[in-house]
Image (cartoon, rainbow, N blue to C red; front, side, top):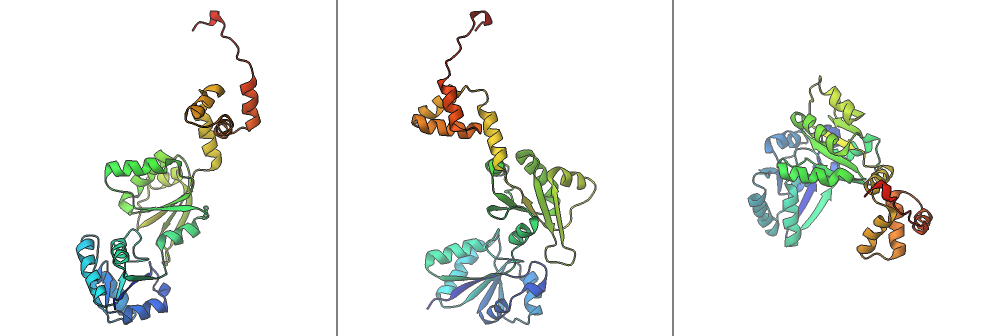
Length: 290
């Protein structure tokens, strides 16, 4: 029989967050695949785990995944851990999980610490709907595309960033999203944990004289419905009601559907649009010119 892949969450700072189930699993599997074996060695030594470690990281994720898959198919059980937190989130583990899923290998998760979720629930921002963006791409074209895509995002957004790129990323987000409430989290679960609920402007002012230290999770407020309605109203301001209607009717909407959409765009009631459409057009005074 084939073995099983265990996705084991490990502490993001506080070793007290390691679960008993995670410890037992790491002791019982045949091999532990770790993002950085030197870093993970400290963890397994602390919990008296003697299972063999093998390296699985960003730069060998495809070739090594093939090797690990072959071991699983031979019947070996493998635990996958990342440097800190939950594997397969902003992590090469997603490649191995996908390959296992395609090969019919059983994958299970041992839940535990996760920096993005910890930051979200500490942020004080809406948790009902959120999206995780992780690290923005380093490729300029791809980065620009992502930033353009999130400009109208209504959900709370979560980003990861290294200290030496933090100011640049905050500046880019501010330029695209405008002023927003944000929460900056660093040293999560550690002794000197910092949670700063602030805004883009205030954060950028602060970092002009204070050097960022440590890895950051940036939680950003989504665009409110009121903002979206205001922007829609601005977008259609230069069109007459009839021209606005024509745009929707030309796109295939019937008359009543077009009225509903025009009313929603302009943030008014359907009756207001209907009354405007019934008003006679005032002919242009020839003296006013063309």
